[in-house]
Image (cartoon, rainbow, N blue to C red):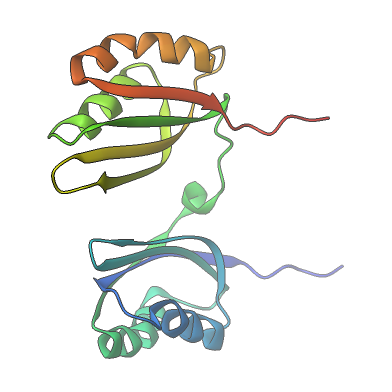
Length: 186
């Protein structure tokens, strides 16, 4: 019988001015260390690049070793680095429960759109699993776009959620759409 090695997990955050080579530089260090990238999200926001990684490695391996090895690469790239050890079930993928849907919001740019929509969803037990915002259009006519991936509580449907958001849609003077993205078995 083969004994599986115990695995440790870490959350790694890297943020700084965007430039080519950031992902490659960080991934090279992780590869050289024998780390596995289990989950990741990377994006550019107004010239800043941000990446969050969940990495794993077999014991014995620790946060200090990971930080010490990543720091020179991040310094060379002009990036800030944060590493956090994950314990117990923090590194376990969780089933979202109910239906997964995509919520789109379009309207004139103004403060409060993210808060009002996120708060409305939270009050209804909807879990936001991904959120992206962008300003599109022209300087004279900017349009605010927000895309959310969300898990509905069991027993709720996208149509019910869209109906519940109708009041907020009118208050904010935005378009809000909800559609299912949960894969369907054939």
